[in-house]
Amino acid sequence: MTNPPDILSGLSQIAGDYDALICDVWGVLHDGTSARAGAIEALKQFRAAQGPVVLLSNAPRPVAVLEEQFARIGVPHDCYDAIVTSGVATREALAIRCEEGPLRMLHIGPERDRGVFEGLPIECVTLENAGVVLCTGLYDDEKETPADYRDLLAALKKRELTLLCANPDIVVQRGGRLIWCAGAVARAYEEAGGDAVYYGKPHKPIYATTLEAARRAAGRAIERPLAVGDGLETDIAGANRMGLDALFVADGIHGEQIPALTPQAMKQFFEAHHGSARAVLRTLVW
Figure (cartoon, rainbow, N blue to C red):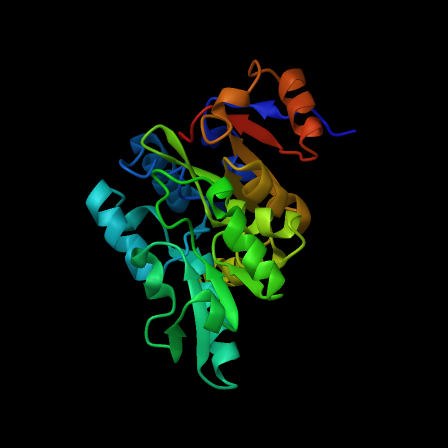
């Protein structure tokens, strides 16, 4: 049985227990269209008082692309020390695959995500000619759902192709709406009997990269990191797998599922989803 989480009014109530912050981006720091001023201030305060902040995102994109988005929506550079993305981890894995020769790859996802493999010896081809599949998202995430990919996934399974998932998120918030992500397509492929490989949260390798980024930023060992996020299947599950304390942001992708914000109600909520968190905040504020 897990202990009931603390219900906080601000990060400052527990910040003194930690020497680094691993913070989710989409749903915590911004909603895809605008930055959250309270979260930005909380990260700045933590950096000043406690230690480094590393943003850990399942965005299937290079860090530079995220920073371009930050500039557009108002996330300043001085609220974090480093960014780690699943896109970077995916690119590293693709580069290793390319060491054996150029890849012929089917890319499932929008054109804007192709920066994750730009410059690598990869040719985007049709399903019939592909040796591997990379999913960075849906082709049109404003209109499509994973159900629209049923026939394509059946064809992938027939060819016994491995699907590389560059974003394990199932959904994200975009301006108050929930948008399907690559993780939903990969999950559907596994349910159809296919093989999927995931890069990003909640899988352990990306946390090793993130903690190393925090150590470099601090110039010392990191002993008490806190993971912050709004995703049960990514942020909270990843923290639980790594044995890290977690701070759950309730006003995120699970907002409509959240019961009364009380210790006992949230304890039952986490138990129903096979997870746990040290504390809960409605939104990230200091």
